Image (cartoon, rainbow, N blue to C red; front, side, top):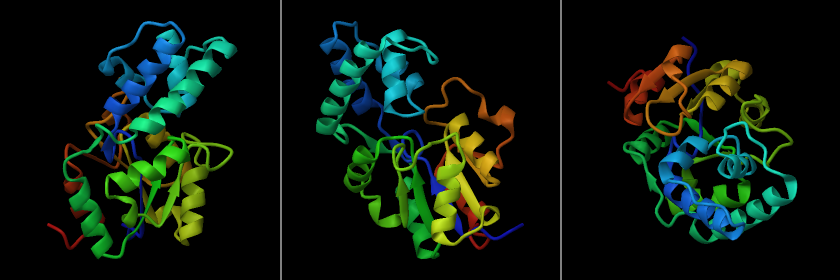
Length: 225
């Protein structure tokens, strides 16, 4: 098997449980436009594909729903304003994340964070969670003209880091991550927690599937047992 030289991580639902803060800001936006709030659990199912799509889903109650443009723009602007104030207030790392990144850093594995979260929130969240030091490249959902599931962010990260897709692994919690990795020609490791939006990722045969991120280490570093 080709040696792993680059590991790319999704952020929300993979490294950080950010749903409580996202839900707080989303519900503030819903109240601002006169809509009923939604439960945190429902909003967890709406996370993925970026903040604009999240607000469409919160307004319509549908993953593929589209709210009227003026309503959406007002709610989206309010969400951005509110989320900036609480980006890491109640968010927390998933078990094993800090340890896994520390081991990979010590092994000189290049790492990146590839998320659909807007860049203006991505960097503060990584810094607040103590993760920013581990990543050689960070791409938000608005860093490039396209975002996951398009493979372009993953391929851009690999090219920037001077690593081939065959030497790269994407770690994520959703079909968006899986589809992006497959299209980029990268291996895909999936976590069983996070925000899979009701998709059974195991049915899509990821290259690895774990309940705790530390269990990826033997697959990334042959010397770890």
